[in-house]
Length: 245
Ligand SMILES: [Zn+2]
Image 1 (tube, rainbow, N blue to C red):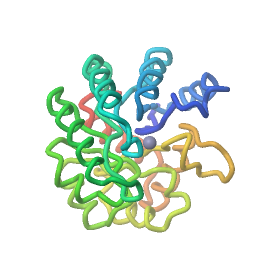
Image 2 (image 1 turned 120 degrees about the vertical axis):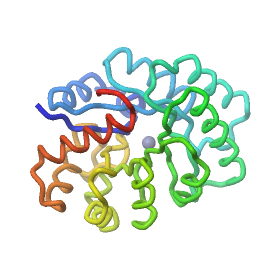
Image 3 (image 1 turned 180 degrees about the vertical axis):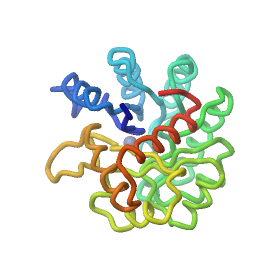
């Protein structure tokens, strides 16, 4: 049975406190691989617990929106990642966001975690809204661009150099993301929900099983059988993380 991949979500998010068990069960029953991503100190601790409890996959990082935290917190996250390097697929999400203040400090924090990823020899999962090119140029580690929203030209360059473009449930509403799917080689693509965010169903909280909507759109646009899409995305993602998921 071929599997779906939700390469980036936040199962540890408090939005799932009421029915996390159910959400994970629903995903697993439908063969959805879950990769959850810690994005704050508390989030990383909870994500680590979820990984152990549910036997799902994990990345640990620090979201650029937390740019105003002091070094003490950032070092705590840094050490947590280091101590648990064997449990993670990648460092992330980390990155920069044009809509968030203090770009200089964002870059400084990003570089710190980038150095860590090199030290522990892991790829990164990047949040790079408005800074796709900058993150690409700064990094000499393999990058999965979570919820990529940059240009098609850059996406091609990113894919050609062995990185992954992650297509999120945003594709359900966005012509730009549909265009990316249409024009990009499918070998450069993975899929995600970013749950509980980016719901494809209005007024509903997103969850990993909704990654199915992304597959439906990819298979329509690419005129490929859904199982073929599943096999390719699965293969791309395993290759990127260097692990059979
Ligand atoms: Zn996220």
